[in-house]
Amino acid sequence: MNPTAKAGFVRPDVYEKGRASYPREVVDAIGLANDTRVADIGCGTGKFTRLLAGSDVIGIEPLEAMRRTFHEVLPDVPVLAALAEALPLRDRSLDVATFASAFHWIDHASALPELHRVLRPGGKLAIVWNRRDELDGWAADFWRITEAHRGDTPGYRTGAWRAALEASPYFGRISEQWFEHSQRVDIDGALARVASISFIETSPKRTDILDEARAFLEALGTEEFDLPYKTVVYVCENLAHA
Image (cartoon, rainbow, N blue to C red; front, side, top):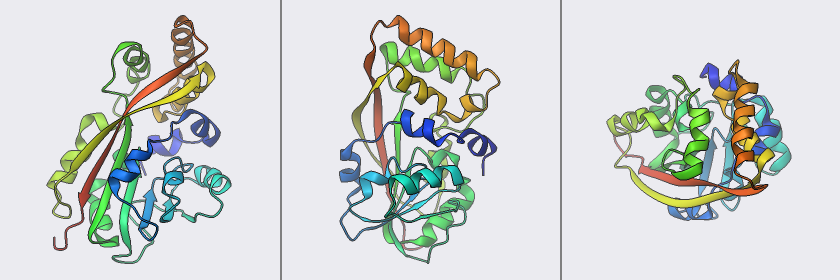
């Protein structure tokens, strides 16, 4: 497991408060039914899993603290302690595997054949992010505060995840759909969003970064605002032969 992820997601209460959910249209874009067998991998506190509750869903989450909150929020949904690289699931047992804000963390060379194994032929791999790199105006300026401290932390911006998927013999063409999304927050909620970022949690400048973010938000002159995102879902089909 990536060491930044392991050390950076240790405050599930902050993650739960700060992280946005996802627009319902994402679930519709994937195409799920009540009998669809879904594994939400890297499910965290279950932010995306909650939208999948109408399907036959299971969570996969390696971090114990995150799993505890998941159990509290979704007591009727099973969650397993596992990584995408070693899934405790039967061959061809899934219709869909989802990754919401998690696909950049995995070792793609190991995880893609494992996903191919557990998905049925023609099953779907769905990758979702609330993206912040397609924004402009004050929101773009706000996120520059955090991005200045990213370093070499994995993320969707590098495109490494897409290169690995497009080069894989296990999955077909990637389709994508984009949706406007926003999160209604006060200043403390927006600061929780900043604090939930792995490389902020592990930074020796964590307090200074949060102070800078607070000063920026207070200068906007409003107590509540809509924090915007561009939500994207990428879907590809598991190939029958590889």
